[in-house]
Length: 435
Ligand code: HEM
Image (cartoon, rainbow, N blue to C red; front, top):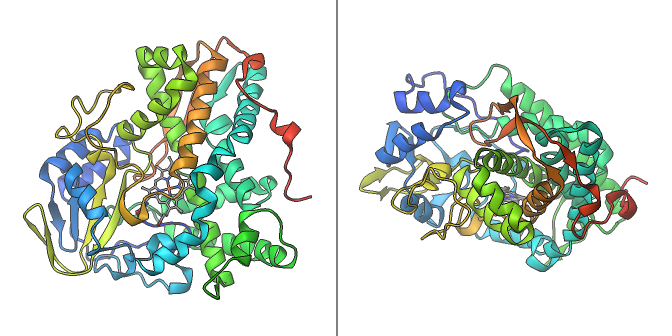
């Protein structure tokens, strides 16, 4: 993620020179279906300075080292390229550097610890099973609309204590803000900044009200935890709570939806790998998740800003340079992965993929995302009889960074509702937060 909700979108400076061919090809919306040939070219040129202020890095070893390098800042407002002023009060910890970053991250990290996440499994199974179950009535399923979007959204809403009934509102704002996450490369669509600012204002008003309510009457949810939490005599003020809530809500579902979509698509396109999953769904699903993360990264890139003069791969880095880290390209680096464009759930890679980044900002929700997607794929493989992609079933999201299908329609012969492994009905567990 190169930015996140709660920010205003960067504008392309008017004096930006014409885009070099490599970048123009990558940003071309016509190439969303398969950006990998263009990413391969950028990786081969890495490190590459297309114009002053920007350095593009795509080799696995370079990306991995830079993500861990303390000379690389996550405070994007330091960049000479996109000097959009951002008040510190609107920044969330994705944009902070240690030690400030460490303090904020620690306050929420407990909620995403391994044991806490494992405890969510029955609930995640219940929600996923209910969602897939409704497909039985229709005989057809848009995987994005029917499963990939609502599953992580409902889970993060319940964790935070946000009424799921408000999902349409949240979905609209968050969709707009996710487009504003694209790095400052191509021409931004007209009106994006105003639209993103409006969406951000919507989130602010919405969460302010919830925060006030939880201060007055705390519940067993993350918002209540955040308003109450105290460390070394310090508390989070409402601005901090708000920025953290918006970060968690958006990061918690706008990425996972793409991982589910990319995974289902990869399985449908590689029947032999799908057969391996079907042979042992519970045991194999985690390996499928890891290979999809490598093969088709849901977050394709992130940025850092060089704090000082330095170097990468023999090329100079100047203070204030934006360093564009191509996570999706690094995951297909032939120096690390043999047959990098192949989808093979049995691989044991020499180095981990970088889809959750690395270093201090390593995705806080990685464990939760892995569990949600493993459960979704396990149930998908177990319950659906002969699922197949419709001829006109696939359309990609317009985003460059958050990569995944906007539509993924499949047909199936049947759904086996009686065979949900370990599922409890979401309705039966019914945790409503607006009662
Ligand atoms: C497949 C799903 C996901 C992917 C691919 C993903 C990817 C990423 C990446 C690449 C970063 C690092 C960004 C950077 O350093 O610039 C990140 C950070 C983060 N992610 Fe995720 N994420 C996913 C799911 C989630 C979920 C479910 C949550 C949970 C609420 C979450 C919460 C966060 C947070 C809070 C950060 C900021 C961490 C920090 O700055 O210390 N993510 N994620």
